[in-house]
Length: 302
Image 1: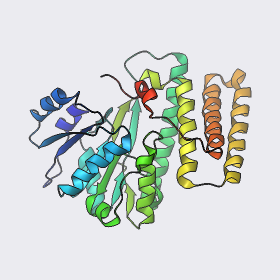
Image 2: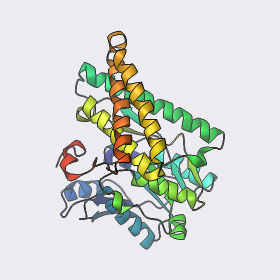
Image 3: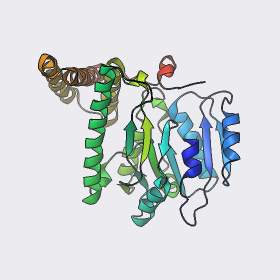
Image 4: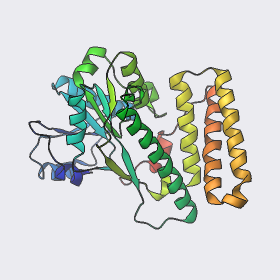
């Protein structure tokens, strides 16, 4: 990520500042950030947020942007690489369309390590779903219908004046569930903010092998389905109907495994995960996807 920041094109006339927030009680990356500081001409900040949970770290940076008078704030995940023209294209979309919140696409790539046949099947399933979603978002942007999209912090830009006007922050009650960026996006839309998509503002992410297992993939589908019910506040009846549909899909895919092989098995696991998440939501059970006990799945090294 840091190398891509150093190499990326700078938007003409923009004053850039890099802000890193470490979600820990003490810094473990100060040397890395110090090395990065020596490689770029812009100011570099490193701050700590000891309260565990992604929304706390996001809010720490958002509060700093408000306090320090930033015009725009961008977020990307720490395991991503930005394309050289990423920031130029993202800010261009924000300014050309007077957007308050904007997102861009993420390209998923294979890890250097050799994948097992099942991991390869999961990778293909995930990337195919992602590309379909990106295609739909590009079409929405072209038709000027992208105001309805949810914008995620893996490739994200917000106008700070809009945040100040609407008084929004990330929901810290979702510290372990994930989905606080989805809720933030929906709250921005409800407040009347202008939301859009920047199709040419690309970042990329290497998917590690440990997140390409069928158990992880199905578990992620479960947790996202639970969050969807929590955020959208769907009725129990509607949720049960959706769960039944997903269970049926899972069964049909499982029965087709002898013919369609691993592709059907992965799809069955994915649909079953979604069904499980929906049913859990009807019982008031929340995702624990980012709980400390799952940290090893989200942290590459310490």
